[in-house]
Length: 363
Image (tube, rainbow, N blue to C red; front, side, top):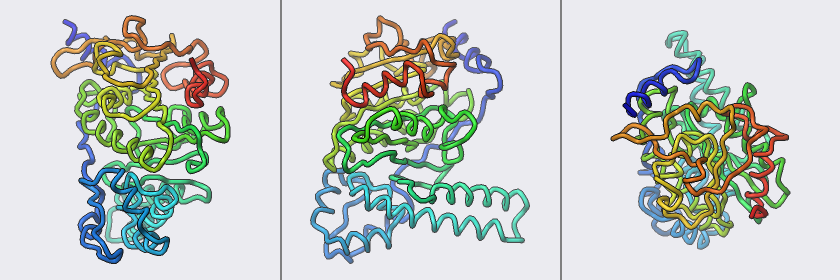
C-alpha cells in the first residue's frame, strides 16, 4: 500500500509536472581524456582524470610552471576545465575555451541548411546558452556538453574565500535551466547568486550541476538510480575544493539533490549538510548518514514535497523525512518561504539561516 501510494503521489501531486522517460547519467571524464593521457608536453605523465585523486591532481599542478599550465589549458580545455584538484583560475580559463569551441560548433550546425529546421533550432538554442555562460565576469568552474549539459559556476572570490558553500539542485535542472529568469530562485544560479548576496565578501558560493537530474515526476524521481550515479561526482568535487586549500564547504541540497547528498554523505568532506524540500535522503535518521558534518533540514508548510510519502519500499521512495524531528537534523526556519522553490528568495527566514550556516555563524 505504501508503494502504491508513493507511485500515485509522484505521478499526480504536482500540477503541470508530467512523468518522463528515464535519463542516461553522464559518467566518466569528458571527451578528450585519451589525448590528455598521451600528452607529454609537461615533461611528465599527466594525472589520469578517471583515477587520480584531487590531491594528486593538485600536487601535480604545483610542480608546473605557469606556461606549462597555460599550455595544458589550451590543448585540453574540456578535460582541464573539469579536473577536480586543478587551480580554480586555470579551470575558469579552460572553460572559456571549451565554451567558445562548443558555441562555434553549435553555431555551425545552426547555419547548416542541410539539417532540419528542428535540428538547426536546437543548435541555435545551445549556442545561445553557451554565449550566456561566456559573458564577462562569469566564473565557470566546470562545463560538460554531454547529455543535457552540466555546469558549475562560482559566485564570489573562491581563492580568497574563508567560507565556501555548494548548492546541489534537484529535478529538471541542466544547462538549459541552470540560470533562468522565470522562477530564478528555483534554479541553481539564482539560488547561489542570492546566497552570495546574503553573505559577506569572504564567502564564495558554487552552483553545481554535476550530475544528471531526473526530468519530471516519474521513475527517475522515485528511485535513487541517478542519485547513485551523481553521489561519487559530488564527493570528488568537494574533495577537489579541499585539496586546493579551501575550507570544507557547507553543502545545500534542494529536493532530489538531497537524495544525492544523502548517498554521498559518508564520503563528503563538508562542514554542514543542509537539505531543503527533501523527499528523503535514503537514510533512517541523521546518524545513518555516517557523516561528521552538521545536518540541517528545512521545509515550508506550502511545499508540495510534504505530500510525498516518506517511505522506502524496494527501489521506490527515499525514506524518512529529514524535516521530521525524529530524523535528528537541526531545524532551519522556513515560515516565510513560498512553496517548493522559494527557499533562497531574498527576505525569507530560510535564506538568512542559510547565510549564517555558510558563514559558520549558526549554532
